[in-house]
Amino acid sequence: MFAAFAAALLAALPTARAQACQPLSQTPDAVQVAWVAPVGRTVRAGTTLEVVRVSDLRTWMNEHGREPGRVLQALGVARRNPRAALRKDWKVTVFDVRSAWMCRPVDGATPGQDKAGVVACTPGDADALRGHKPGYSGCGYSLDTGASVRGLEVYRITWEDASAQGFCVMPLPRFLGGG
Image (tube, helix red, strand yellow):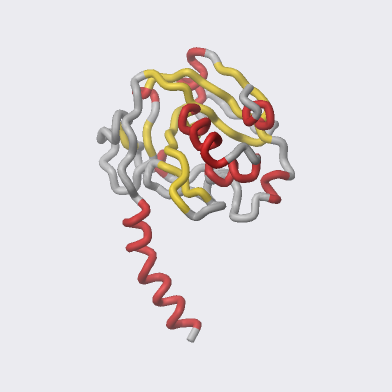
């Protein structure tokens, strides 16, 4: 019986995956993005970050609330139960960037192909990043692990490019409070 259930589940995965990939919104040339990470996580110049648009994150918070666990789930960094993620302190780093400096992690897209104003990442850059595997969709947006629905659109950018125009770091609770 378990084997039949497992076979049915595996057969449904490609269909669920295909349905999960939905159109992406157009990205403006200049955009403010946020990298949400545990406090103490540092990166080097060549490190690739997974970021979301600040406007998208604020819109999501206005519609769904500002509870830290739910925000981390919408970003795809917390599992269905966010308790383990909430044992850490989190920070939000905000950058002003150009869309040309970013890529979207879209499986099956030709690298360099325009995906609503941002190019598709190379295959290696499109893989799930450390800390983002629970909600990685491969479609250019996160999976909201709390609601099992589409989360926020995600982009990839190197630290060197992201920090070129400066940045602001704040604790997650301050960002959630409107800081």
